Every structure is written in structure tokens, then in C-alpha cells.
Image 1: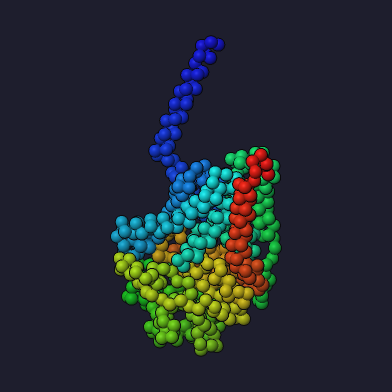
Image 2 (image 1 turned 180 degrees about the vertical axis):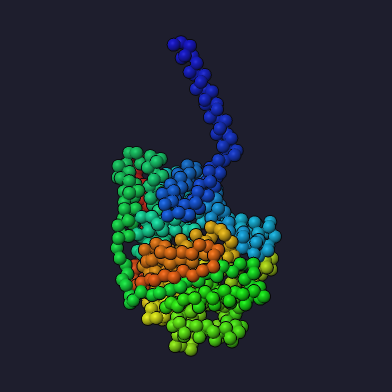
Length: 531
């Protein structure tokens, strides 16, 4: 007994010395940013499967717990930035493919440009973590109350500033989970707020932040279970009703390789591929993808225009295709035109939200574009208020490629539109995560609007999506073919279609204001008085 008692102080001292060594090493080589990068990479993985939504919540909760352990604002900034860097480097690495493989930009420059973009996007989660830490100022419980609305505000800012790039926004991870029920009410950013609140509550419970405050502890438990249950309950509601008879649609996928798509010598081959697909079978609506025939409409051979008109009339099918237009009145536009049976005038939609460096060059950035060998041009934006096309008695709202990333813009054609149609060419990014990620985005737009969403793409993912966000059918990527579907047009107006992102923004600001007000009240409360 005596020997054992004599050894215990030595053991305690040795353990203390080892702990000091670990702490000193951690101070010199901080591990939290490394852990945050790994968490960010896991966060990107959560967008690959409908069943992965619990992973997204767990990863976000782990991030919030790391931020809570950051004593200084600078530490929170490093953690948030590292998380964002892992998130976007894993999730949008396909940017490198477009720059290097198809743009023929030198490998180091393409890698650097991708890193710069991901670093810029990582500033938004970093800023949310910084502001939450600054507001809390050592009061961990207030950090958990404020970080969820700040995370949502950061995502909103990322979707709007500098034309916006909300790709891989938090809410998209939940398109197949119980939180999807909030989409018709609060939109994707409302789902983001719900997910962040659940994650913050999980982190608070795991860290035992409120062990003596029963009301706060119960609120966390309620958030963890109540928010998903409420979202699930909302999925049972019907936000739209059938409008008219079903619509028979054919979605064409030409699988034209991107490296030869704009080669003038390949134009005839591309035309023949799509004419063969068009003429195989009639339908109410036949949709070709973005820039399906890669030449300005004005430069189409007259025989091609005549044949498309004849096919539309003979088959009694509306043929809609993505095509650039050079118009003396509107300038260059990335458009969708429709050959409608019995009409001489073409239906037309002009893309209104253009891609920086893809469809227009920001001021002072032409030097960067000159480093790439991509057929770019300064296109003009279409009107933000365009009337849906009337096809077979149904009103169709078209959008082009990246436009369906912006729910607040898609709803501009509602409630008039009965069907949403996206035409895309994601071949710029190869066989990458961009394809399934874009499909997930389109599913969210279907949920928000309670409308079917149809996608016609060059290489994938060509798909039909129902108003509940379920994929009814899809073509295998990198195959030539047509997806023949029958859809039911819908009418009605969801709360999100009416109010857009305003409720999600207002709710985030309200929660943040209440948290801050409570914190200020606690700071001025006399000592000895407990809330």
C-alpha cells in the first residue's frame, strides 16, 4: 500500500508533464484547423446521397463544437475557413476540369484559380464563426444560440454577393430528408436554418452546455427532435393541384463531347444526331439541351430551320432547344427557342442570370479569360420578368443551366407556370460531382414550387422530377438517348413562391436579435441574480 501510494504522485506528475507537452505541440501545430478541413470534406460527401442528411447534421454539429472551443476570434476564423476550404475543395473541384481540361489553362494556373475560388467561398463560413464567437465573448451558450442564424445569413450572402454562387448550400443536403418539408414554406435557406438549429442543439447537448438550466436543455432536445418532425409533417401537405391533362415529353441527350462541340467541322454531325433523336417519336414537347446546336440561330442554314418547322408541324410536337442568338435589339443572348405547331413566330426565353467568366467577363478580368481557350463572349441578360411559354395548353417556365441555382429567380414565373424546364450543358466539368449535384439543385426547385421539373442536358443528368422532388426517371450520363416521360402539370402557389427568401431572412435575423438581446440583458444583470 505504501509503495503504491508513493508511486501515484509520480504517475500524476508524469501524466501532467505529458499533457503539457501535448498542449505545447498543439499550440505550435494547431490541430483544430486540420480537423476542420476533414469535417469540411465530410460535409461535401453529405450531398451525394439522400440518406446522408444525418451525416450533414453531425458534421455541422462537430464544427460548431470546435468553434465553441475556440477561445479567440482568430481561432474561430481559422476553424471556419479550414472547414470551408475542405468543403469546397472536395465539392467543387470540377472547376479545375473546365479550366485545365477544356479551357487548356496551364495546370498550375488552373489549380491556383480553383484554390482562390474555394478560398473565397470559405470566407462565408469563416465569417459566421467569427461573428458568433465575437457575440458570445466566452459565453458558450450564446454562441450556440447565435451561430445557426449567422450560418444561414452567411449562406444567403454567398447566394447574392457578386452575382451569387450558392452551389452546395447547406439546405441541398436535405432534399431527401425530413427537413425537405420546409422547402415549399421557407425555401432552401429555411432548410439551412433548420439544419443549423438542429446541429447547434446537438453540439450544445453533447458538450453539456446547459447542465443546470432545464429550460435551455429542453429547448435543445425540442430542436433536435421537433424540427425534423415538423419538417416531416409538412411533407404530407399538398401545395399544388393538377392542371389540365398530362403532358407527354421527350428529353434529348446528345452526348456531344465537349472538346469537339464547338468545332465547326462537327456541326453537321451534331445536327444529324439531334434530328435523328427528334424524328424517332412525337410528343407534346421535345426538349434539346443548352447550346444543343452550337451556332448562333441567325447562322443556322435555312434548310435546318425549315426542317425543324416541318418536324414540329408534322408530328404536332413543340421542339424547344437551347441556342445562342445574335439580335440587333437585345444583343447576344443564351436562349431557348421553341418551334410551335401552327405558329410562325418562335417562342423564346433569354437567360437572365449569367455566369461570370462563362457568359460575361467582369471588368478588369479579360486577362484571365485570355489564358483559356474556351469560346466565351459577353452575353446580355434577358429580362428578369419573362412570360412562360404556352405549349399544348400548358405554361412552361424555362431556365438555362446554372439559373436553377437561384430559387428566388425561378419563382418569378410563378404562379403562372405549370411546369419548370431546365436545359443545361454540364459537359464543361467532365464526369464529375457537378452532375449529381446539379440534379439535387433541380430537385430543390421542384420542392419549393410544387411543380414538376424537367432537365434536358448534353451529357447528364437528363431527368424528370415530380413536385415532391423525387426523380421519376433519368438517363445514364454520357449516353445518347431520349427520356420519354408523362408528367402532370400543376397549378397553385406555395408560400415560398409568394414570399421567396424573405421569411427565412427575417426568421434568421429575429433569432439572432433575440439571442443578442438576451446576452446583453445578462451582462447588465446585477451579480448574485440568476436568470
